[in-house]
Image (cartoon, rainbow, N blue to C red; front, side, top):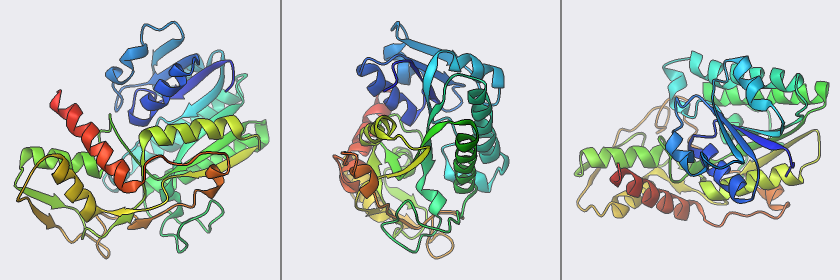
Length: 321
């Protein structure tokens, strides 16, 4: 890893804070920029007094905040974004501002800085309804079916263009569903909250057959760091996920088991467009991860194990609130 400081945008959030933990534990100097709209200071509280750590309360929509955060940084892990796929169907501006515009602002600031390395967290949703599964990085054409996926694909294109024009080195990580502690949204978190409110009935969006790859957050950040360390091309793209899938009906049963509940009625809404949870929900997803495995990484937990561990993590955290 670059000996200079590492900047993590969105570093107080779910995925960002786990990345910060690993980087700090490895002895890196880390700067975090986060506006705390989704992130929490408690996620990074372990490091706030550490001389190698710096927190900047800043917004990716404010170019001055970004320039300040980039000072003396040698690589940027760009995680700041709207993390919720569903929101775009109700507010079309969020993905544009928090994903595309925020990324543009960062790239412009990088152009004026000495930093020339960026690692970007993209998403499996850029593939849309892939006809080939497991889906490799060179699959196309890419036809996202949500504004979230579209905005992440736009960010990838911007990063590629800036990299070739201005000499950046970029790593794009297309992530499966990442789960684990500190998560504040997603199917596992939603199920747990619903059951805390009503332990007798669980309403499930869709028909329960939605089937996707789930990856435990610690496995994910290890893969991202390895990709950053071993990639040397202008723009390198890696799928990061598990090698199997689990369906929503099974996730519901796992959450019920981990909460120690019995006789829970599971009610499926039936969903939209053939059983999806919502408009823009990709019903099936499995990534081909042979490229990142070629660097020496593989997930320690499969999809079902990741879901179960994440459920335990979140249940434990919510009990402490």
